[in-house]
Length: 115
Image 1 (cartoon, rainbow, N blue to C red):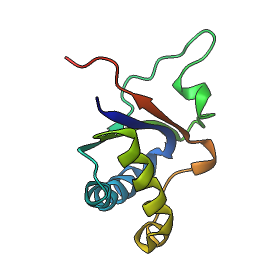
Image 2: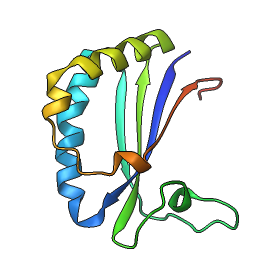
Image 3: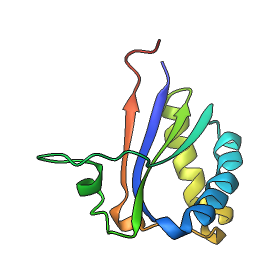
Image 4: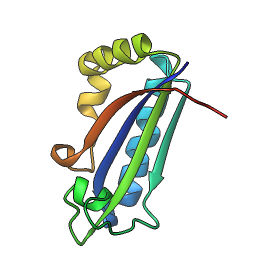
């Protein structure tokens, strides 16, 4: 089954276009490194939770929007290898990153069901 790298991050709402440009520049590189699909999702209905929620997870500030991003890999090994390549690739180091990476939540997930 596939492997998914997921990201939840706060982005200044005014930087939506800059974030989209960044995502559009990164996606072909992820694909070059083996990604099957890449997705970027701009928060439209982020609900308040009683104990936790997306806003709390990223310590969202009033002028920010929560973004949910994902990369689907054929397997964990491909995702792990791609992560190493990204750290060494100058294209990522030169890219404008219009988000606060310190508050980004990142994780890898093994697919257990697809429909």
